[in-house]
Length: 318
Image (cartoon, rainbow, N blue to C red; front, side):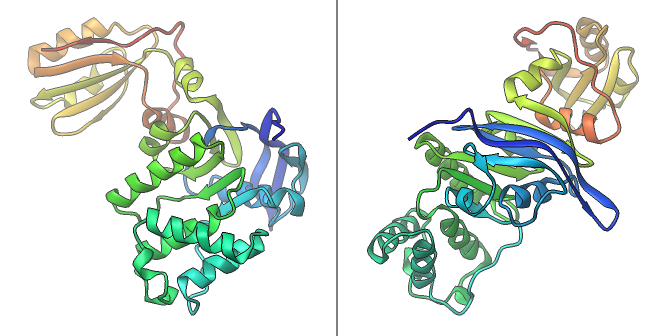
């Protein structure tokens, strides 16, 4: 199989709806073989971008290539797609619907049945193969919808908010499946606003805000750009005063833990000294900022100032 530099290349695309600019001059490169996170708050333009990649809607300007060819019907033959707005044939029986979906992908009936049966077993719903879709719970229907996206072994799998509404058990199941598919060579693109999930799965990300990419690159490079400017703490006591200390850019705290973003000139040891005077410290760690804190800073009104230099995290335990 030929490899292109990019599974998806989005070049300066713009899309407007009745005077509203949903996507504004967006450019992205999604390397083949990556798990790529398309991140951003609700209304950022993620789903609109995905629909343009899928050729469901066309950009007003710019161009999109999938595996080196213009986005269109030929490109879609290589793509599995799980839309944010789920849609199934509710009156059809599960296995029959999956066989039909496989036939649309060019599979023979026997091959489609074999793949569908294997996926139903993998996702723990093989006992429901003969039931109508409308008889399934919402969680089971999500699994069936996922199978419709992966049947036929697409080279590129696009998942729009795949973990929405899932309980923790099924979230972990889907994360394992996504990793297995990627190890088998499938490029994965998924949109989400769940930063912990993106941080666990993605090798590269783009953070979109108001239709523009405000961050784009490998996860390691995005985090390295902001340097070691975060402290995580676990403690007993009231930590509200930490947000007023010199050198603290922002504080996110709970009853027993806190994440502190520092200004570039801040001295972490001064923060530790002040904390020890008023709190019982159980853990104090200097580290790269989490993707969650970068997300909040970039789209929540604050500004993260990239630090000079990088390095590994430092920690002190009390």
